[in-house]
Image (cartoon, rainbow, N blue to C red; front, side, top):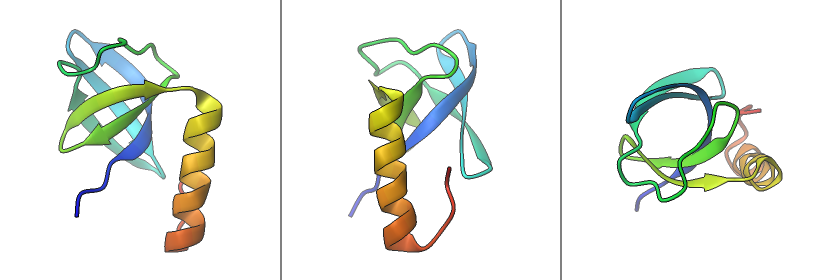
Length: 75
């Protein structure tokens, strides 16, 4: 089973972005995303790639579901 998670974009450098969720930071590639994100946007991340951009409300709602199901703090 694969899991993709919403992460907030902190910094963009060309086709790479630094993203964060729950205190974990990661650098991801932006080559596959159809709607290029801006700093502060949320993106769905899987296997080191941003797959799609999400609006903040949808991302927060999804992260709350993860928090409830996994009993972790992500927001």
